[in-house]
Length: 199
View 1 (spheres, rainbow, N blue to C red):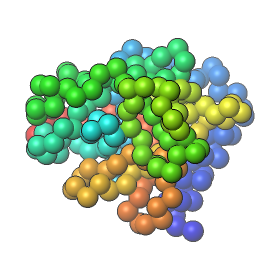
View 2: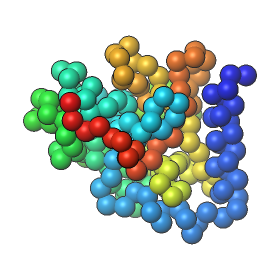
View 3: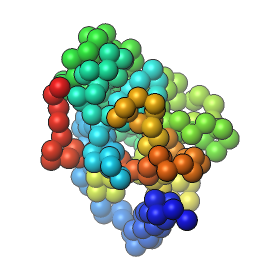
């Protein structure tokens, strides 16, 4: 088994163990308060922000977003009482392309595919009741964003898959692509200390 898949499995077991030991005092204690951004960590991806791109969630850096000429929009999240992550354009982020001048989305919900969904794509839905997607159940363990399943376990099955554009990854859930290019990632609400915010 490839080392990255072993890492993903160990990460899942570790999260489950933390929940079994009673993380209620730590959950939501720090992460997800007010308006926040999400940053992906794993492998060569050292804390890149999550962006909106035509309804899909992608991972890249601000320099690439600035220079891409596409509608890559930085996202501001807020936690809802039902465990949803509402998403709107982060108009204070340092991305100076046309997307921030005319944001193509507002008040959408961050989603992952449901069990009956053949797609692994993570994205943003304007209707939380859309078929075969999950928009609620999000929580934080410290600063790590996790999904709380119906049995109470905490899950993180995020992957970054190359999009075909240099330094832009598609964010997926429970990825089955076994190629070496897919990277298991963790989403946190804390940026890296060396975050580059300008082109």
